[in-house]
Amino acid sequence: MSEEKPWPDTIRAGDCEQHEPLVRRVLAPNPSPYTFTGTQTWIVGGNVGAGADVAVIDPGPTGSGMSVGDPPDANGAGHVDAILRAVEGQRVAAILCTHTHRDHSPAAAPLSEATGAPIIGCAPLSLKDDGPRADSAFDPDYAPDRVLADGERISGDGWTLEAVATPGHTSNHLCFALVESGALFTGDHVMSWSTSVVSPPDGDMAAYMASLSKLYERDDRIYYPAHGPAVTKPRQLVRGMLGHRKQRERQILRELEKGTAVIPVMVQHMYKGLDPRLTGAAGRSVLAHLLDLRARGVVRDHDEEWELA
Image 1 (cartoon, helix red, strand yellow):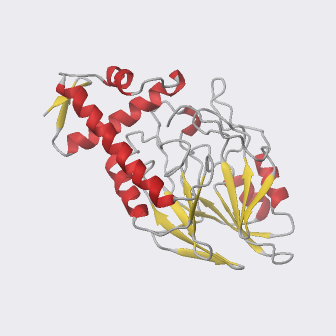
Image 2: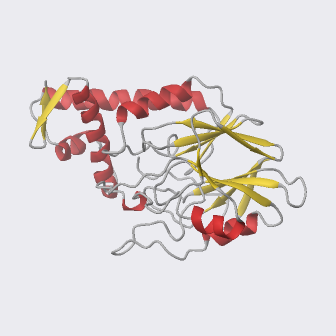
Image 3: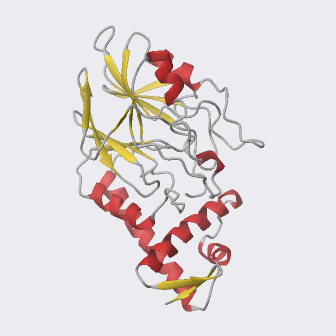
């Protein structure tokens, strides 16, 4: 989570762009302060003939995927049609979801209906999201045909995808490794344009840090996130993200050394120049840090006030 950074996208929403022989991208029309230029749906599989198998990762929203109006708009932007255009003449063998936020998984059902492909990947999760990210409320209708465990693989014509469990942003978050090319599809776990929002109760900072450390130990060549540009130096970015989170923790402890504190005041002191639209999300991440510190016996709370233990 950060202020928006200038990254002019190379394609328009609905267009399909080739990134490497086995990887294409279709951009969803749901830009926002939380989704950047929009959700990126990744298509895995080369053009090896009519009817060749492909996999679709993070089919995205069924509509705009943004918080618009009351209730939020979730209908009619045509992203499923754009995916179908991109895979015309090929067979969708699997629809995979990294997690079940509303900007990632709702299109799985209509895409499955249109193609007959099974929905595979993360476990279902239905929670009443009390965080500020209306664009990322959980998808209560997600119903996978198969849930992948850590290390489990699926394959098609010339490609193999391996599930990499990365809880933290959500408890059901998976990344997917493309064995043949060394690419890792990271969903919302690692992005170069922004840090991931970790929003309790489902988001868990200790799990998120452990998952970052897990990726740091891997040797993936490139990351393809669900939002923002590809990451060409994965271990360098992950090392920086681990350091950034530890720095945030130190900031929180310095705030508490001054005396009892409440989260809105800590956010005001810690996030200088933050887009006001992201203030609530920053507060959720601070809460995630505080809950982790409380579990470790470092801090305690009473009536939404926090202090050193």
